[in-house]
Image (cartoon, rainbow, N blue to C red; front, top):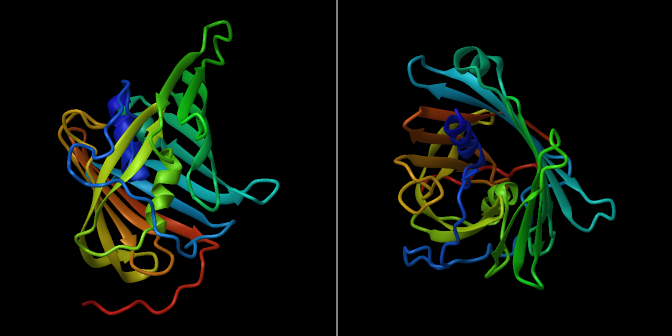
Length: 286
């Protein structure tokens, strides 16, 4: 069930996973795609924005609701940086069918101007297993340090992992929001540097289509984005594929994600959106 848990969160997180095993990818990711930073632009979100998603698993039974996910944008006390709170919670169907449940809460501090991760605080509950962790991104020393503890066994030594940083990087949450900052057109290819649990990856991402999607906002134009996270020596070392649809408007909201793996197909769709920025009329199809 641990693999199913990771796959559900992968579908939600869109460009990253909760992979295990220490790995540091090269900046070109082995694909000849240069790592780049998002172009400076007006932010497509503001403090107070809340996005709520529902995750459904299609395998033996079609459309089993297995998870609810919420992302809320906030600010530090000083108002200088963002704090984005993310929560992923299993639904009762998952426990009934697979005898498995999970809760994950992530608080990510993000530097406002450069928009890169500074700190990640995480609570990870998988049935009876509980872990607290913190990752600190030190760009002066060019290093990310991850420390994980077991609150049920306070005398157990902490698990520590440290990796070098070759550039500003993201965590699980800031990676999602970094996609929203990036101007897109079909054919674009870029890297998203991601650190999770002390590991560092450069995830190749391609924009493969612009197409209509039925959403809570109506039938809107979206870019289809395909992060390459499955396969040998990648974040998920098994066969699979992932697609994400991000609205082609000023808000750049991820409205849908689909992950196919040996567990079946997981569909994540935006169910509610609160305090989003106003949007101009969408541009016509080219």
